[in-house]
Image (cartoon, rainbow, N blue to C red; front, side):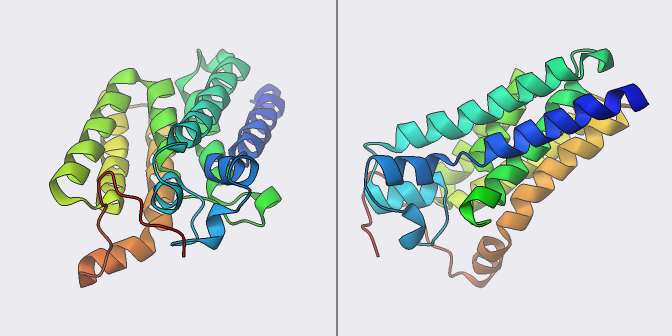
Length: 211
């Protein structure tokens, strides 16, 4: 057990600081000469970037945030391979890369909400889970136009899938629900607005402009 302490710490720290590489902030800073957090909701995530700058460079935001999650998870899986390429290691790194994205120390703890990171973690852990939560997200957004609702439903689906697909692996279950919980916590404001009927809907293909 003590022999695993070093790799666990390395995997957690590497994943956390990879999470600090925020796609929306990076693209808006380098290509738009601006900071996405100064517009719209102030969130450093894909939805606020797309609403503020349009679709043209949103793919780069997706690529960065998905890529860092996949990289962190694969690193964790190999570093903690004594657990057996290790789904536990993958999800441990997945939790910390999500934490780094949500609460990035290098960005003053003003990050995103972890949805793309969560998808990357799901794909790294089990492609079936990734496909399911992506389907849940897209279906909810197409039917309701609420990105936040799709994100929250996908987070719950992630926790449920991990529990159902890997029964008896309590570390996997706990880490899966921790990752889901981080998404829900980061969307607490959106959930309040959903219940009060004041949440903004997504305008497909329409740039809403900077505010």
